[in-house]
View 1 (spheres, rainbow, N blue to C red):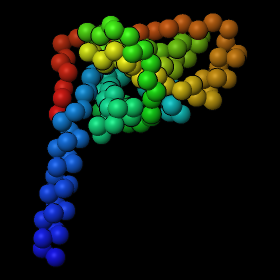
View 2: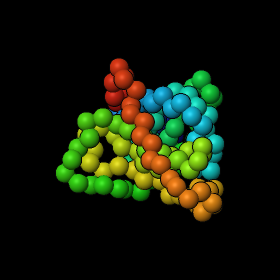
View 3: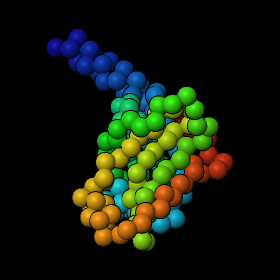
View 4: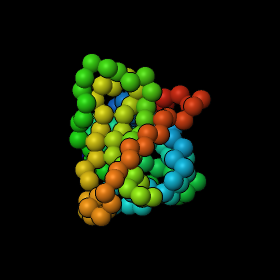
Length: 146
């Protein structure tokens, strides 16, 4: 029984260390309310983790001042030879409504795309034009790898 407890604790410690090691979190100042998956997120300073829990296409957004946290999955986009030197978020803007569309991390040629939600699809049908808005990673903030 004692050996099983030690083995379980050791395994949990290794999993925690492995998942924390590869995480890449970036901070963004998003000056407008936006839709992320099925959640409306307020304007604020966000910590974005494009590989939450060390899963490549699992996206996490957290705003500490807003007390909002949401998750979604992404699909791979891009994949060319150009490696972006700076992270960025790309939003689709219909009228005055914003939807998070893409996430790009520095040094990774493949970004993460988000599937259009039902709300975005309906908004796109009723709003004839769409603008693409890019928000760069917050200046002065280094990439945090835990």
